[in-house]
Amino acid sequence: MIELRNVSKRFADLVVLDGVDFSVRKGETVALLGPSGVGKSVLLKHINGLIHPDKGEVWVDGQNLTRLKRKELARLRSRIGYVFQYGALFDSMTVEDNIKLGITDEASAADETYSRKRALQCLELVNLDPVVAEKYPAELSGGMKKRVGIARAIAGQPTYLLWDEPTSGLDPVNADIIDSLVEKLDDELGVTSVVVTHDVRGAFRVADRIAMLMDGRIRAMGSPAELRASTDAAVQEFLERDLTIPVHH
Amino acid sequence: MSNATVTLDIRRLVGRFSLRAASHAGRLSYLIFEMVRGLSEWRVWLPRTFEQAQNIGYGSLFIVALTAGFAGAVTSLQAGYQFTGGIPAYFYGGVIVESIILELAPVLTAMVLAGRIGARFAAELGSMRVTEQVDALESLGRSSVSHLVLPRVIAGTLMLPILVVFADVVGIASGWFAAKGALEMTNADFVYGAQYFFRPWDLWYSMIKALCFGLAITVVPCYMGFSTKQGAEGVGRSTTTAVVSASVLILFLDATLAKLLLTRS
Ligand SMILES: Nc1ncnc2c1ncn2[C@@H]1O[C@H](COP(=O)(O)OP(=O)(O)OP(=O)(O)O)[C@@H](O)[C@H]1O
Ligand SMILES: [Mg+2]
Image (cartoon, rainbow over all chains, first blue to last red; front, top):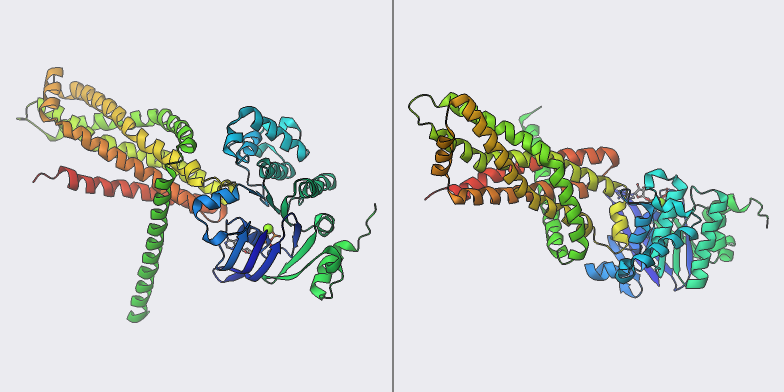
């Protein structure tokens, strides 16, 4: 369970979040949509405590994140995978070592054979060739970096996953693979996910519910069907753009 | 501009400056507090400390030797130029050895390393900060202080005394050679003078200085790197600020330690 209660956040004079209420049930996948620069990444970073709210509370797994001690926060974070919008790979380490750092359980991380196997397995899950393991992030393309970031986030088998635009910058085939991965982690492993995305169609495909962030607040939130039926003009305008394109199956 | 606006301006400037200084002091204290707390995670920082120490040690040998070598020779030549006639030859031995051990080796080594490793630490951590690598580490439940700061600070602080001893040896040797060549003194004179003026406390003092300088040139740059903002330009700014403030801190500590530890009552 993830819950933001009346969260506000400003940077100097810029009010980014202005009383956000947002909740994700256990095992659910929620897509977070909204125009660029509205504060989606900022919201996502509140969920694992990378950003602290000025006002309001953030609850994850029954714990109030704003009150946690350092050790407890670290323990909670090791169960929350975070896919950074721009990868944020450790650039002085190989891809394999990057992914191994994602194995947050100390005993498993210390086990050389397990961690190597897990690293290669995660590479495969994001559709990357095993030879990539030996490379450094600077030698990869943007989309490859993104997928290594995803591999690192899932390596520790987290129970929560926060995805910041996992499919942006990917070709349609790989975007599809990542969408399937989101669905699979959700369905098979019961992972609770928040997916920030610009890809409205992808959102409708993977999400149980969709939330729309606008002007510092959650403007609308509901199942895909509910959102499509929304009478809010701003929501409709945002959705229509992508959804009117005919979808072939 | 009227007088009133000038005073106002100055007041605002002083106000802003003290605010910034106070916030730096606060966040720096917090980092130090976190470092002390992180010491218990030795499994994380110990192996990384060895890597850093090796890098700092081997990588600095040449530049430290070069600096100490020239400093020793120049001290020797200048002593010969200043002390004319009537001064016994063994005197030079004492002057050279003492200036190197007490002041030149620790201060010059620290200054050189402030540029070499201080700048590097600030740039490394700064670019990790702006590319969200520090956040990524934290997001995995790992402590960025134990992973990134402690290995650098511990390695730098422990390597500095070792490098200072190395600088002592090179500086004294080169001073000795220069003295023999320029001042016509015998080895016996030099050794006698060196021993005559030498007190064991001098070496301790030199090591204490080295440790303090080591802390200064590692903690300050790591802090600056961690508080980097705004991309490549921010990294550049942090690096410059780190080297300048570490250097100023070395001079300040140098004076303070001399006053505290060398004043005879
Ligand atoms: N650390 C920060 N300091 C100051 N301002 C920030 C910071 N982080 C984000 N902002 C500001 O907050 C606003 C929201 O940023 P955010 O990155 O969350 O947008 P976003 O919705 O993720 O956009 P995009 O879809 O383009 O990624 C932006 O105006 C940004 O300038
Ligand atoms: Mg964003």
